Amino acid sequence: MRTLHIFLLLVLILGIAGAPPTAQRNRRQIDLTVSADHNDKDDETELALEAIAGLWSSADSRTKIDGSARVVHRASGGMQTGAEQDWRLGVRVVFS
Picture 1 (cartoon, rainbow, N blue to C red):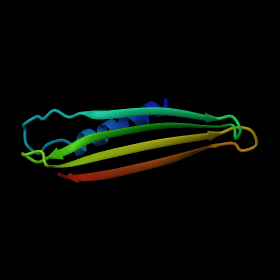
Picture 2: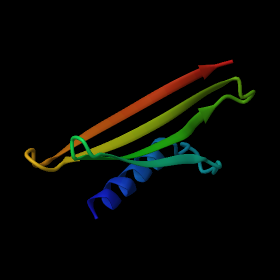
Picture 3: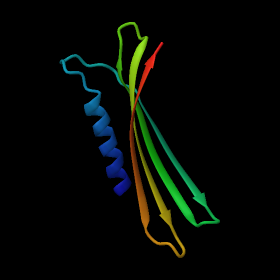
Picture 4: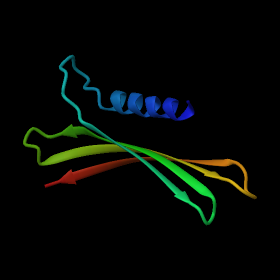
C-alpha cells in the first residue's frame, strides 16, 4: 500500500511540474520503470520505481528538458532487520 502512495505521489509531482502555465494542453509521455532484485547471499530485496518525463521542448525540438524521480526501497532479513528508503530527483537538459 505504501508503494502505491509513493507511485501516486511521483505521478502527481511530475504532472504538476510539467503542466503548462496557459490553458493549452500538451501531450506528455511518462516512462515508468519498476524493478525488483533479490540477493540470496545477503537475504536482501530491493524494489525500485522510476519515472522519466519530458518537461519542456523548444519549438524546433533541438533543446529539451527531462525530469526524473526514483524511489528505492531496500529490505533486509536475517540478522539485520528494518528497511531503508532512497529518494532521487534529477533534471537533464539536452542540446542538439
